[in-house]
Image (cartoon, rainbow over all chains, first blue to last red; front, side, top):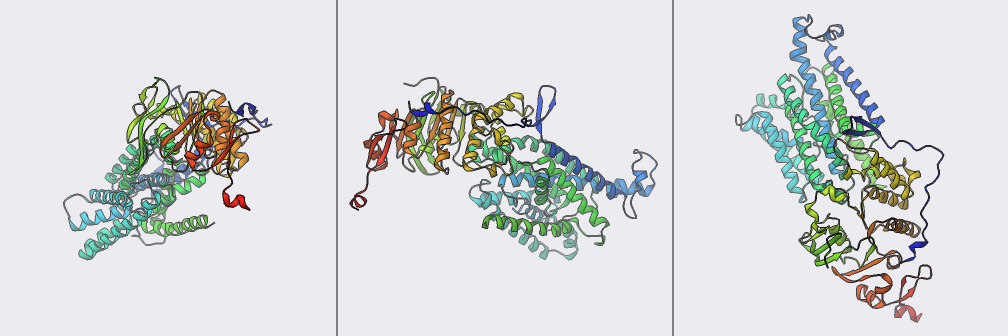
Length: 363
Length: 267
């Protein structure tokens, strides 16, 4: 035996303060027990309150706004014809689409950023949104009538992601390569869109232009139902994945050792992120930077490690809802697509992020 | 020869893409020992450890756990019996020591039962056993190298496994922290765990191992108790270096003293 016998077991240090509870645990009966971070819950509730206020403002402000006193009367109460129209045709479905699409983009961003381990990893940067635009443009303007526009967007997004997957040579396992290849795919897709637009008539191009910027204007309950259904399926998938993602966040080898299957987890997360972003992009077009900003802002608010899926979804919904309220009531003119506003604000934010990354690397 | 119980590699060939590192190697992890694997760079010692931890799949041959191929078990079931700390794990951004250690409980948890009192007890125990109990609320990023490594070991300890595999746990640490981590490993072994570690320092290996394995070019040159196998011939065969073996005055274990090369001796 070596001299390790000389080693005395260390006694635990005596600290005056009582130990803090390991984690608050939410229990339902004996078969559900989930740890909860109080700060994250508070943040979630506050963002939820923000969403409620934004939704109220969206429905009540402006010439067509429904007075708040009438709005809060239970449904079926005497609404005028105009109010009925505003709620059920104009602003109601638009609000529902905005909230669900914002949440979808937030989820996609949170998943992409966790998997790529990079704050810049988002469907915008790696070419998914541009791919969806290219698909929508191709099937909406060039090969019309084969499949509907949203299906075209789906095809475009999937093709873009396949190109990124193949282009890295290592699938989705190398974050740096994914972003570099993604920027290339993004540029290719945008060039493709421009090429198609040059081949089409001005009227057609104008119609698709609003879609390509990302717009929530004149959306129907069908759009809202599609996006809502997507969220209904994807949100539970994402929440189920988020635990394994936390483990995968510690490196592939450790994730495999802990039984979380690094590659399987990453692929599942990327697939869910692509579905979520594609659903959103299909309904509102490639609204820029929401997916990039939402998880970042959520993380700064909660200060919790991990993907923080729920907070990212709420934040995404809030960002898009506020932006949409701004384009509806702000001094931008009537037709400004919401994507132009988020691109303007998000561009500044992207610059800030790049500067931060740059400083971090060069220190 | 083959026992039904325990962890072993049977004729494994291990490769990274096209580069074969180990060919048809068999190795039984001795139960309840502190095994240390040494060898020159690129001899395949970390590769063998990865195969035993089933994070690297053999090209041929198999790794057996209790006589069954390790791949036949559910991955989480294996993770309840065998923990592995890789050479460079990644600490998630803004994670506290307690949360990091808590993640070691993953294989014991299910989607609905994500945290039970057993998890809390295991984390507390791991925090105290590794001496990081006073650091629980600190962020991992702000710890010193030695503290951080102890926090990582606490994480694999919280897994509550009988096997503990450590890939170069002392790399990047200063000498005091290296011995601190090795003392910790030794205590964990004394408490009944089977520990397998890859180390670079031969004297540390000889001092702490109860079973020493010396590898070269993907094969095992010798294995056994350090004082039985550690000879100048073995060191020369493995590392191509001339040395004397003396007795460590502190621990009584063999100690490698490299010979002066001729040019230096002449000065």
